[in-house]
Image 1: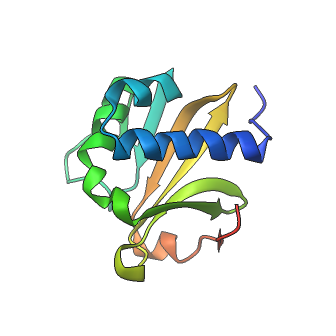
Image 2: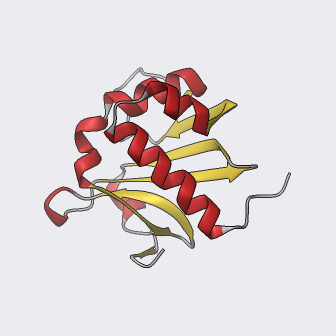
Length: 126
């Protein structure tokens, strides 16, 4: 399976993801996620003992449970692909990178670990 190379289409999917979270719309989130989608979080992003990889339903619930940070979230290029950066008061606190195939999100990686965050190539122009 080839990764969706259309940056414009990927941006539309990511923008719809942000809009669904901002609108607290669980069904819209599920519609964007492949049924086998997974979210993977680094050790800094989840409480100790919690699952670091979950499926689509849990992915949507987890995204909505973190909606308070969405006001600080913006889509931007992360290592050359469209993702989401969370930066309250201009301080980078987290990044979500996405794998999109056939118009659906198949994987979300959550990065909150400061040493990993500082190694990312972030670009405002998407």
